[in-house]
Structures are given as C-alpha cells and as structure tokens.
Length: 328
Image (tube, rainbow, N blue to C red; front, side, top):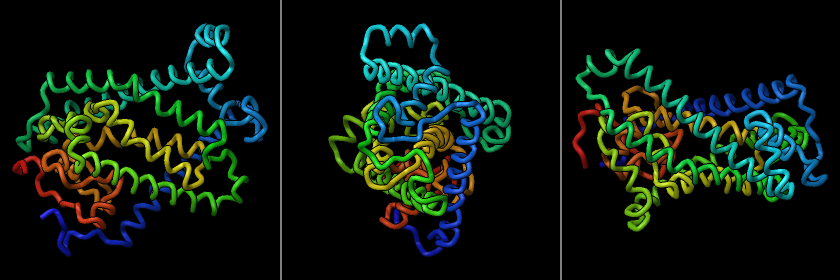
C-alpha cells in the first residue's frame, strides 16, 4: 500500500520545525541579498507603481542583465527595439545563459562529489550501479534542448511582476515589516508546495499528460538510470507546468521579489539533489530516496520539498532500500 501506517507518519512538530527552518533560510538569504545589493552600490527606485522604467523590479533586472551579458549585446537590442521589447529579449537571453550555467555547475559539482570523491562509499561498497555515460549524455541533451523553453517562464513572470499584475513586492516596509514578511513567506512556500504536488500528481493521473508530456522523464525508472543531470531532463512543457505554481501563487499570496527569485534558484539546486538516487534519512523533507521511489513506482511521492502533501492526501510511500525495490 502507498498509504503509510502509523509508524510512517511524520511528526507534525518536526514537520513544522523543518518548514520553519526552510522559511528561515529564505528569510536570511533575502536579507543577505538585500544587503549585498546595497554594498554593490545599486540605487533601487522605491516606487513600484511610478512607471515601468522607474519601478524597482525593472531596474533590478536591468542591473542583472548588465552584469551577465556583454554591453554590445545590450546595445544591439536597444538600437533595434522599444525599451520593453529590448528589455524582455535581453532578459530571456539572461535567463537562458544563467539557467544553463546553473545546470552545469550544480549538476557537475554534485556529479564530481558523489561519483568520484565519494563514489567508493556511496556506490561500490553498497554494490550499487552508477549511471552510464550514455544515460548521463542523454539527460544532458534533453535538459539542454528544453532550456530554450524553460527560459521563457521567468520572462513571463518578470513581465507580470514588472507590470504590476501580481502581489509581488520589493520592500518589506510595503507590507508592514518583518513579522508579516515571514508569515507571507511561509504562506507562499505552502501555496507553491501544494500547487506543485497537485500539478505533478495530475501529470501522472491524466493519461494524455502522462503519455505525451511527463512520461518522457520517467524513462529514467531505475536508480541506475537516475543522476544529478536528470534534474531538468523533461519535456519542456512538463518543466513549465511543474514550475508554474511559483507564478500562480504570486496572484494568491504576497511574496518579496527577491525571495521569489531565491526560491527558484533553490529549486534548481534541490532538483539536482533529489535525482541522485542516494539513500538518506531526511524526513519530513522529500529527499532523494523518496523521489527515487517515485521514479520506480510512479504513483507515489509527488511532493517537492516536503512529504506532508503526500501524507495528507494518501500518496506517501516510505522507501526501504530504494536500490533494491521491485518495479511496480
């Protein structure tokens, strides 16, 4: 049965503690990023509704674009397009470049650590099989091709935010200070977690979506077919659908813009970790051993960061030794 028994149920106090720890991580990272921005001497306009070119979201993204892309490229678009057209074209290129670099850096470092630095302990001593070179190259190819589409979602998100359609905000003072910010951050994280759970679950239960969209990712259906490189090896529409709760929840819960950006970054790192097929006790965090069982058993463990949604809606399946489980 995929429904856990009493011994498998997560401790609610422990779950709340882990959830608060993750919220604290985002709160601390947001504060540090704000301080870092000021140290760089970036003068942020503090009038989100003062017009497109004067709102802080636009100004911040322009600043980031200038840091990542060469001036000649920026000038090329500015000479041939309107301000908005040039801005979003450059933002797409920035997101594509940044997403690609993040993918290779995070997956590459994790690959080096688990297969080379710790390969003897994690695999050879446990009699486990590392993914083949062919599998890894297949995952890299699929991820890289999909990256061209993935980069479009944050551009759409930026447009919604910069045009004032969402509840995203720039300054903590806008919403009444740090206590309210922390509460909103927790609510936004919960909204995203529930949204991704149901989106992921629907991609499995809807036969059309599974066959033509999500099933491609599940060709990696054994531990030895999983690797950090599988983190974003999806049909591009699949990746967009699973990430869209981050955008949808901006219409439901106010979220600090920098916190939103940091969550997207953290998700990319997290996706790398949960596809490494390693066993580790992380409850109530949805660690890689839970996600490995999701890949081998298909209809369990749909959550992103936590096991709570799966426990609450009856799809949690606590793994034993995930490397030796029979396929469902």
